[in-house]
Length: 163
Image (tube, rainbow, N blue to C red):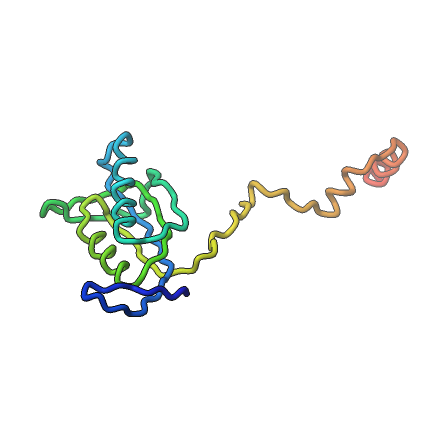
């Protein structure tokens, strides 16, 4: 972790450590697709105003949730089965992270979010091939069937089966 000098309002310098964080979030599905970019920009601008350094992010996509989620919006409980999922990875101090977390709690456009401390390196694993997509290993019997066979061999095997 990198050390930086942080200037506190009183003008006193103290040490602060930079850490890497990642926020995965679900936005309400009531946001029109043409306004989604504006909402994401507002969110990222808020992060920038709080002094974060962006590492990576993914633009939100509409997804179906595994279960129904609820959120109180304007003092009314609303339930959601769909929403926009996006994430952002950034570097900041612990104090900046606390301010960002408090703002995410108050943002009524966010259904739910996950705020974690992580590492700078890419932790995404490669996609695995599913059984239907992969080439199945051929068995020895399959390999035998693919070998060219002459007519004499076929006749001998038929005679052996008939007897």
